[in-house]
Image (tube, rainbow over all chains, first blue to last red; front, side, top):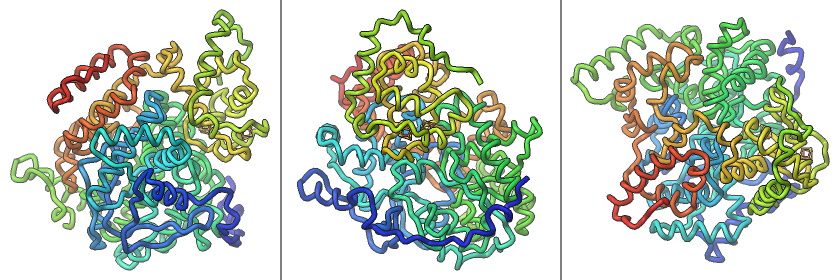
Length: 397
Length: 236
Ligand code: SF4
Ligand code: SF4
């Protein structure tokens, strides 16, 4: 075992300036504006108020604070519903206006990267239909899934570079009665969490400062069209993306480094569904075991549908093989909500997770037995017919 | 780790013209020139690649092969390698600004469009997911969490499937009370999605790899579109 301190405690996080003049490409903002002037599309502007962050090349990226249109994730809403619930809960607790639309489809990219049963025009049309639907409501899209985020950035690049694709997609949207709308920024919800992290920290009610954490950033967040990812001098000296880590630092947590930080989680899109031996092996051997051996964390915080799924669900089978596993996994939104006093079952919905979170809750002084009893009592009311649904009021209990 | 047979003997009987036609299809994709700018053969993509650690798989070999237009080797990778890729795009770190993962996406698309047996085999057991995304607008729905489908994920999967209906109603966001879709999607939205599939020829690809799935989807979509007033639309 290589102890964390031996490898990483020496880092002084020397900061290099993010200088837009050194950027290797033309600023996409300028291209979007130019194409708008040429009548190719309408740019959906980030509503005020926004927070100005810096992207990988030091260019300003505007992150909307409210009036956000939540582009949900199939994997989060379907299999880890406390993930999206926590995003909404944070907005409500911070008193911010948002919209949870039903005129939204999946980006369909999980399927595309798994099966290739689609093509560039279809993928772009699906993206632009969702963007047009957001524009029609006056709310600005914020993307919950890193793969949707990555795929939409990729789609933006393709539309920028291919006039024929723009023409084709504009024609398709025209038949649906929609305009071609391109958001000024493609925003991931973790960027929003990052930009409101001080507000989250101000409302902190559960002391997180005793927690050691490791972070896994999603490949499709910072590698696939990496330019849009947020970097900050105060986080890793702007040498790695700042999201998640910035939040944990604001909450006073001990964020620990490990040598495979850059590695993928092993999700694989098709692999997690039909070739899970690969996903399990990679997640456990290249991520979980390395983190445990080098950093000894209490919790792993990540921020994507696939990453939470793979890193959490892969540990059960590995335990049977005597692997060094047993590390709770949750999203940054769930952790932020927990720090602000959210209910671990009504809001975080931790019973949908595979790894055991009870020791973590105990360490934080949260009585999980009582919380579970409250959740079960609420479910009993649903089963008896006394109530049809639980509401946000129930979640504040 | 099973070793990739690079000798070419497995595909010796496939006519060169056929391999070349598929290669030209990949090259004709509008994204091709953005994904490949030649290759230094440096292997940086391999260092970043998760699939290369567990399979006899190499984004470098694929980028080299496509750059050098080695049509025989291309055909071999098209059948025996592309489905190992995790589509994580870690290889976008390429110093030559290539996207080997993107190239692989294009190769997979061509394999599907042409109904290659290897593509059909790779997608075996995957039809339910394709059905979900194309027919309902969301992909991995809550009702897919069955313990026989995910036995390796742990006992909580059984608890979820047993309590699914109640636990979904216990979710505070109103849009998440669904079990067959990940969230509630408007009828109008689904109609628009079907129109997109129709206008972009995606269903023709499904037909090539899974005729049975195509027929089921066709029924569902044509019926819905007819109800929405689009009675002249056919996926045939
Ligand atoms: S996209 Fe494929 S080839 Fe590229 S790094 Fe990921 S697994 Fe490897
Ligand atoms: S594709 Fe890029 S990273 Fe990979 S070997 Fe070629 S030049 Fe190097």
